[in-house]
Amino acid sequence: MVSFARYLLTAGTATFVDVAIVQTLLSFALLQQPVFFTLTVAMGAFAGMSVNFALSRRFVFTLDMRPAHRQFASFVLVSVTTLALRLCVAYALMALFALPFMAWIGALPIDAPAERLAHLGAVGLVTVYSFLAHKHVSFAGGFLSRLSSRSTVVP
Image 1 (cartoon, one colour):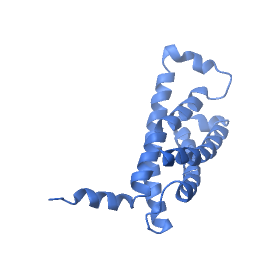
Image 2: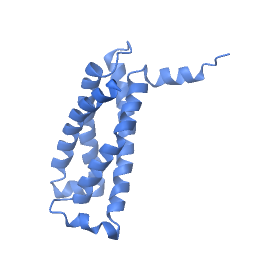
Image 3: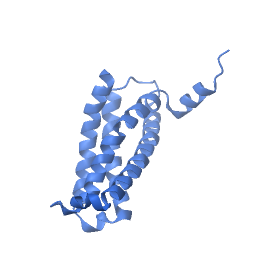
Image 4: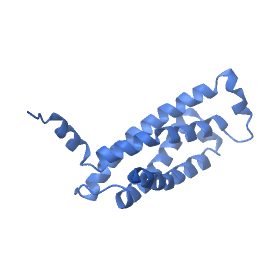
């Protein structure tokens, strides 16, 4: 429980970086378009990922004795799956917000309200997945370690 609380603090810092970048970029009309929305979310995610790795490695998870660059490679792979999940959730939320009973969202006095709310909702919903994946893969020997431990047959 302590490591999850620490993760929430360090991931919170990384999320602040991510959200600040995305919300700032969404102020530009061009970046509100669906293709550019994906790019905007990815830019924020990669900035946040770098902050999250540095802080998580230092303050949250125990070292698994691999060099930092190998841990970072695992962290990037997990973060890419997190980004993919976040994009799926964000687009699902935008589809939900496009339904007639959610029309009030479009009337909010901010630029791109559906995109902004979808991004924030996706960030929140994917946090637990991110913690568990980093705990059990990124800082637990990486993907190959997880695969080899699963293939070992215990008599």
